Structures are given as structure tokens and as C-alpha cells.
Amino acid sequence: MAALARMAGGGTGLRGAGVIILAGIAGSQMFNALTALIIAQSASAEQARGIMFWLLGNLSGVRWPDTWLAMPVAALGLSVTLWHARALDAFTFGAESAAALGIDLRVTQAVLIGTAALITAVMVSIAGAIGFVGLVVPHAMRFLVGSRHARLVPATALAGAVFLVLSDVASRVVLPGQVLPIGVITALVGAPAFAVVMVRGRQR
Image (tube, rainbow, N blue to C red; front, side):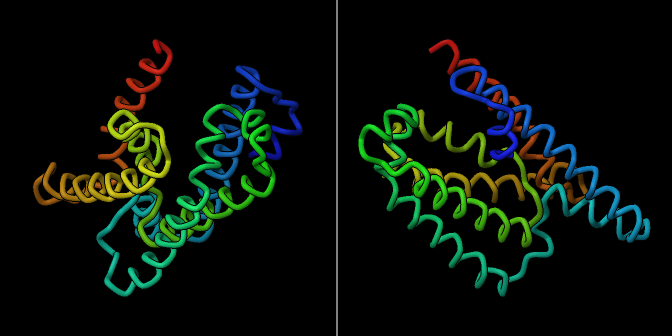
């Protein structure tokens, strides 16, 4: 998506943000269509139902052995992010400001984006695609602990874990006798919360 945004000549400011958003929408729709095509061609009706349930996120199939894969990757991601906390603080003021402070933009972005992609791939392979946790929780914690990433990153990790556990509990008790995908709960909570964050950010 980043490559598509660069080829589209995103630039900076509102135009750059708009190009990135449109590139993300286009890529998301393309990969969703490919996923649906693969499911339709290779899965039975019962398998398709299970796959769609998993795509919205589900912890029912997660077992203790899965933690031996998830925990080291999560610890690695947290360590790498904390190591680059000052660089992330510099990025808060924009890429140009970070470069002026001596931050190697390409290397830092490659390391952080690669780490985020690794963590996302591992966690999604275990629990499915659970949306809005990574969008809402960091913004909520920024209001509580400030924008310094040395405090924001661990606070976000802890709050995200608590939010996910509470969402899992809610998915099991909202409808008696039926378990909802966690992504349904996180979207119902996260979408309005993210809208509030966007409105407050614009007002500020």
C-alpha cells in the first residue's frame, strides 16, 4: 500500500493522507476479493462458515502451545518499539522534523514496519483478524499517559490485552448459547470510539 501511495505521488499534508487512505481502501478491497474467491473455490459451506468466523477473530481455538509462538514475538515487538521510542517521539512532529534531528528515516521505518508486519502476521495466524484494537487503544492511552512513547507503548500493550480479554468475555455472554466473533464486539465498541477520537483531534 505504501508503494502504491508513493507511485500515486501522495506528497505531504492532506493530499498525502488522502492518497494513503485511498491506497489502503483499494488494497483492502482487492485482497478481500481474492480471499472470497479462494474460499468460494476450495471450501465447503461448513468450512466457509468456519473461515468467515475466523476472519472476524476468535479465541476459541487458541491453546496454550500457541503462546510459545505469540509471547516471544510480542516481546520482540515491544522491545524493538521501546528501543526506537525516541525516534517515534521525533516522528510525532513529522518526517522532516525527524530527519532534521538525525533520524535515519528509511532504516527506522523499515525496522518498525517490518516488526509490525511480523507481529500482525503471527497474531492473525493464531486468533484471526480482530479489528479496531490497534486503532482505538493507542489513541485512548495517549489521552491518559501522554505522547511519550516510552510510556505510551507499554501502556498500550497492557490496555490492548485487557480490552481483548473483555471483548472475548462479552462475545460469549451477549447472546446466550452462542459465541460471537470478537471482531464484532471490537468493531461495535471501536468504531464509535474512533469517530470520537477523530472529531476531538480535529477540534484540537
